[in-house]
Amino acid sequence: MKEKVSQLLTLFSGFVMAGCCLGPLILIPLGLTGFAGGLAIYSTKYQTMLRIVTFVLLGYSFYLVYGRKCKKKSSIVGLWVTTVAVLIMFLYTLWAKGYF
Image (tube, rainbow, N blue to C red; front, side, top):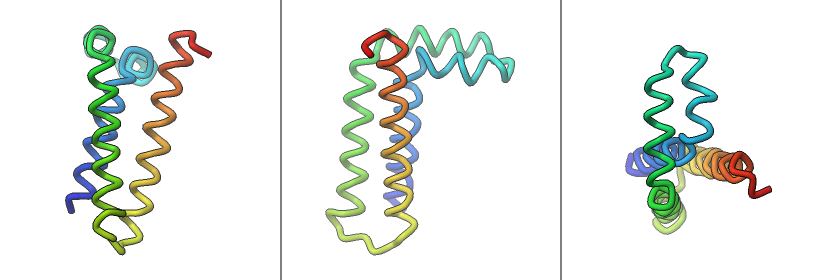
């Protein structure tokens, strides 16, 4: 159960980290323009801290799955899906800011 919670928290913090670029792309078509703007301002201001929190949570998720030798296939698959999603959000943020 702890693995799933840490993976969800990792995805949430990754989305907030990428909120400056990814938030408006997803939230504006849903009609949440004000929320998208607020998220973009917040995530830009605290992006470095959110990056650190996201990768610490990702490391904790890896510890819960591999450090404790979790045998559940769903936890392992969920961890790798979370890892790929966080890396895509991180790379999209770097691409949108012009680092690539």
